[in-house]
Image (cartoon, rainbow, N blue to C red):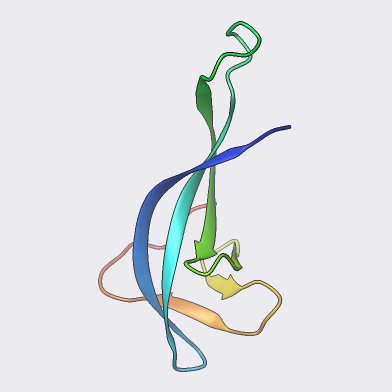
Length: 86
């Protein structure tokens, strides 16, 4: 299925490696199948995808914890931001 990403927000997080990372939260969009073929209308799938600003994927665990995919680096959002949802 073809998907598009729509930026929802950006925020900073501190990594367990001591570095500061900029995270981007995206809404996954899919084509609106109720429209005529070739239309450019997209609708939310209800899923949010997290990535670092350099494009690397960020995984969200069942408790809303963040980790850079393929690494052991755990991310903690800075400030009073709420935990991510799945």
